[in-house]
Length: 324
Ligand code: GA4
Figure 1: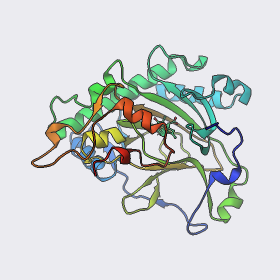
Figure 2: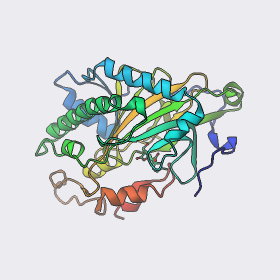
Figure 3: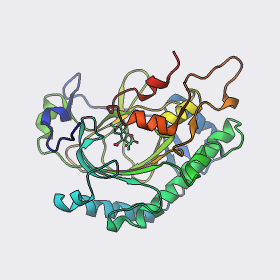
Figure 4: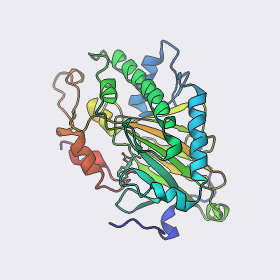
């Protein structure tokens, strides 16, 4: 399908059930302090209960985060004609309002980058993205090793080795959600502006950092959407579909979305840690107890990714691979 350059405005909104209701703020998004020895247990619990948590004392120096944020602000404030020189996203590059190739739209512009060292980045991002990604990847690996330890998985790098692999198919994304002039009027009518529609991430683990503008919401198992208070000093971690499969459903790939704030720009940077394309994604044998069989048909990351790119954002991508 051809990407729309100017999609009809109606598509950017979702109706809220009750006009003017404030989003629910969850009081207790799991908060993990990576400097504490008990973080291991909390990590496993957070992956099981929510598939989502926030980490502090993560060891990524602010200097690297700020440098990248500064370049991102500069990039997104440059003229559209300049930004478009880095597009279209096929799948990497600059994109505006249209997400993927199957008709999804959102009030967002973005830059999708390959994390392989030799990749071609817009000029000011060279070096800055590599530094940031290697630090965030290191933190993601530490988290995955703590998870493996706590679950008594051998070797302890059973998950992290997939991100460390030279062939790891990981992606980096910068998202900018610009203000929207008529936001108040729409809110009065009970309409929310969709920045990035609901979806789960296909990879193993995603690491998100945003500026101090709200917008991220996660979907809880009781069927409610809750707004995640922004925190520019912490990282938010999502379990992806592949980790859900590798843990045979113990860890949950969290459904999330971004409702554009409308008043202030929101900027986020996300590292999506994925396995090599040839990697078989299947439950770890040591996690299958007694009679427990795999909930999923066997597939490689290449097969999963290929099928994911044919879906709409909100589709249940793992559904195709579930055993009935
Ligand atoms: C969701 C997670 C990542 O942002 C992403 C997205 C990708 C894209 O923007 O090109 C996809 C989406 C994401 C899943 C389904 C397909 C592919 C858009 C889309 C409709 C980069 C990814 O890996 O999968």
